[in-house]
Amino acid sequence: MTRELHPSSRLQERLAEPARSWAVGMLMATLPGPAYSAEQVLSAVAARTGLPVTEVARAMVAESRGTPLPVGLEQALNHAVQAARGSIAPRGPGTYLTPNRADAERALSRFFDARLRLRAAPSDPEARRAVDDAIYTLCVLMAQPSPYAAVNEALQYTDG
Image (cartoon, rainbow, N blue to C red; front, side, top):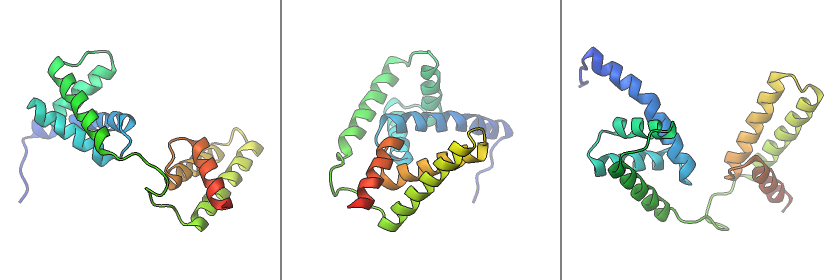
């Protein structure tokens, strides 16, 4: 059974979604975790302050644009972020899944091919997108936050 919303309520929900996405992205940049973890932090802050998640998200967006957070909301956000950071185990050798070696080799090959293509045609937007896509794939595959680290990790992984 679906809940019928008043047209203005649906509009409010649609307007709140970009703020929520922005807030989740901001939390993902702060926490070493996926969107799910950021959503949990956002929900924890909302529960602690008694505010709807959309209001917390809007306040976070406003804060990123220079409007200070209310003290109670800032404290709840700091507490939730610290709690989330404490619950994430630091990554060490062997504490994460490693990719299939053939997948890492294919991703590296795709990256080097795309880079050569971009060098041959620096103004080609398709070549730029191919490099960006290959770098993104390496970062995700090797669980590294930067392209440099991802390429190095993949090179070491495929050589060993």
